[in-house]
Image (cartoon, rainbow, N blue to C red; front, side, top):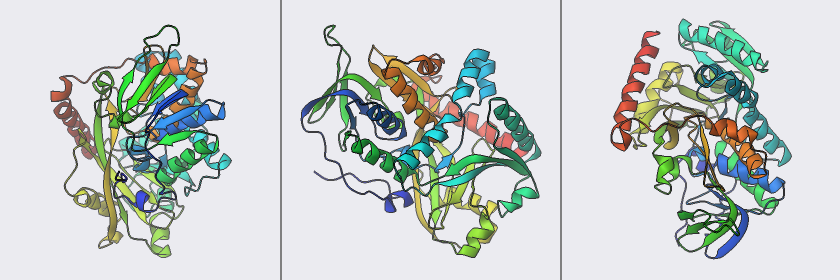
Length: 432
C-alpha cells in the first residue's frame, strides 16, 4: 500500500516525526473511537487517555493532514465571532459561559507542550494590527471586552509604538496580546499524537471511515465505525473530520462549507532581516475581514498567509495571491525567494461559530471553527472529553447554539458567501 503524503508545505518538510502508522486491518473494540487526527481529534483523544480511557483514532490520511498541519500557527483567543456578538444574539448567560472558556484553548496548548516536552518552536506574543482608525477603535473595544471577561494581558499600540514590533508603516496601531503566541502547527499535533500513544492510545493512518453505525442495540448501546479493511466498536464516537469529512455524514456537511486559505514561506532570512521585520518575534494578524497573518519560523523564515477561496477550490498560483500582500506589508522583501506555498481547508459556518452536537446518544461532533480553530479546537477536545465522562454542562453551551444551513444549499452557498466576502472586503478597503 502506498503511504499517503502531506501537502508540500514547509511544515511537512520540517516535521519532527515522519513515521507512518499502519492502517486498520482488523475488527477491534475501544471505549472511544475518534475520527480525525487534527487538533480536535488529538485534543479529545489525549484528554480521554489522561483519564484512563481506551481510545482509538482513525485518520484517513496522515496525522495533521488537514488544517491542523497547515495553518498559520498562531495562538489567537476567543472565537471567530467574539463574546459581545454571542451575548447580543444568544443571550447574556450564553455569552458569559462562552466568555469563561474563550481563553482556555491557549492554556491547553501550553500545558501539552510543557507536560509532554513537545518541540514545536513555541514563542510568546501576538499582535492584532489595525489598517485604519476604524479598526484601531475596534481593537480598543476588544481590549475592554476581553478585560471584562478576565483577560488582562493586553496593551494598545499606537502607530509609532507598533513599529517597535513590526517593521512597516502600514498600520495605524494595534493590540498586543502578551498571552498570544505562535508555533509549528504540524509538530504540535505530532507531539500530541506521541503523547497520546505514550499513554496507550492507538492511531491508525490511511484508514478512511466509510460508515458509522449508530447504536441499534439497547443492550450494549455501542456504535460501530467501519473502514475499508476493519472496524472499531466503541461506547462513544467523536467525529472530528471538520472540513475533510468527504461525504461521511451528510447532515453535518450541509451546515458548513469548506474554504481554503493560502500560505507561503520564504527562504531563510538573515538575522538582520528578521530583526527588521519582527524585532520582538511576535506573530501578527491584521484586522481585515479577509485578513493577512504572518510570523517568523523557528529557522528564521517569514511565513505569510491570507486570502480565502470558497468551496475549497485550489488556486492555480498561490504565490500570485499572497506575495503582493506580503510586499505591501514588507516592500523590503522584494525579490526574496519563496521556498514553499500551499493551501488548506478550514470549515466555515453561517454564523461563524463552532458547531457541537450529538447524533443519537453516543456520537459526538465538533466542527466549523470558521478560521479560528487553533485554540477553539483544543478547547473542544477538553469539552468533548468532559461530556463523554458525564460532565456535559460546558459542551451543552456550545451545542445549544443554533446551527443553520447555508441559504440555497450546496448550489448557492459558494456564490452567496463570496458576495458577502466581497462586501466586507470593500468595507475594509474603504475603512467604513
